[in-house]
Image (cartoon, rainbow, N blue to C red; front, side, top):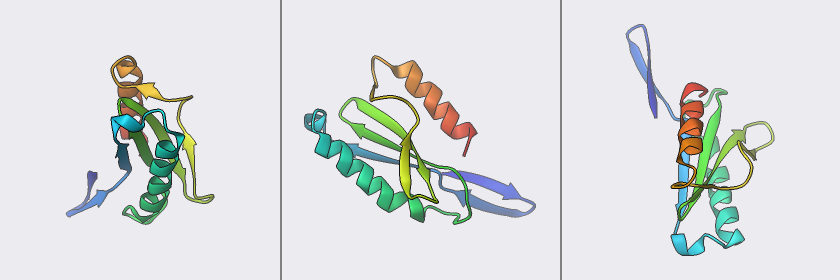
Length: 104
């Protein structure tokens, strides 16, 4: 959630949804696919409705994948290869969070 001020008006911009699943499901492809399906349900409804980049993070246990929602095709595109471990690849995750913040 980000607030933008234009003149005297202030409005919110929703640009990121995190879908998290339990650690015990880290190795289950169905957990990853289910979380992505949920993102596909949520991301089209973020405000404002005008075209802006919308991002998602699928987190299963200590693993994460960052995705970009393509509004035209209604598909998710990974912003990196594979899954990132939040402890072992924390710099990569931080870099992606900055990228999302700067590009929404």
